[in-house]
Image (tube, rainbow over all chains, first blue to last red):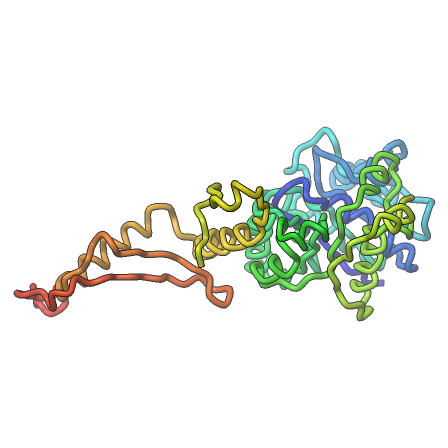
Amino acid sequence: MTGMVITITSGKGGVGKTTATANIGVALAMLGQKVVVVDGDIGLRNLDIVMGLENRIVYDIVDVVEDRCRLRQALVRDKRVGELYLLPAAQTRDKSAVSPEQMVRVCKELCEEFDCVLIDSPAGIEHGFQTALAPAHKVLVVTNPEVSAVRDADRVIGIIESQGKGPAQLLVNRIVPARVRKQEMLSTEDISEVLSTSIIGIVPEDEAILTASNRGLPIVLNGKTPAGQEFMRIARRLLGEPIPVRPPVELSWWQRLFARE
Amino acid sequence: MAILEPGKMSPWERLFGSRRSAGIAKQRLHDVLAHDRAEIPPGMLALIKDDIVAVVSQRLNVDRDGVTVNVMLHDSRSQLCVNVPLLNSGPVRSPATPPSLAA
């Protein structure tokens, strides 16, 4: 098996990289793919808690590259969906504990066994980001409709292209359709035009995201919420299904009532 | 297009509390990305402006205060946009020999 490595990055922190990685990973597994999600944020491990797997970690990626365990032993299985595994980051080490070459080696081994390897990159453009980028076959850049996030996304897209890892695709997160309509918020068209990058998905702001991470249940497991549905569509697009990318629609109050978990 | 200075609100906006700021955000992103992509260090545009004024004023009377040098995005590429207003007094009377022709 030769899996595909997808790195999820953003430049700016706090735009939803970890949430996107967790949900796209779960969605791909729900679609029958054998998936591993890799937490690339060494020292600030988060993917485990967002996915609700924090109590099951024994070894981490640094143990793997320093030969304290085999790769298999470090993988934590998510039993809620088909074939989904987490390779956790170390919490007590720093970003330099894994080099880009070591990350490439780990991913090569994972690709032999998995269809999809998703890497949750740390924010920034330094060592940790370079390490997460090194093995990527495909790169998703997460951004928000905020000037700071869009500017950082542009910088990251430039670096990705200069390293021959492009073209990156854009995941626009936390869009509020009503505010876009009132021209209070950058629209997805504005962002796509400014960045001249194609869009893989537009995830609406969704209250259910916070509840989901509070509980450690990725929102895509609940098929009713608008954000969860879009993450599922993004996973389908990654697998090559021709699902058109559309801006989220404004929900009426009663639709919102039924879209809760 | 009358884009206001960042942070400034028109009297209309102040009166009616308009929050239509998406257009401002887009314009500001355009401007800042034009600089970011060209990797222009701060202060370089001022130097370029001085250079251009020095070259052009060997031939023409330049309105130095009106000269603008900006970087703008055009088809997602950065473009240097130079505006050199002239004083309507024709060519410089005794043109200095340009350095390139001096030798």
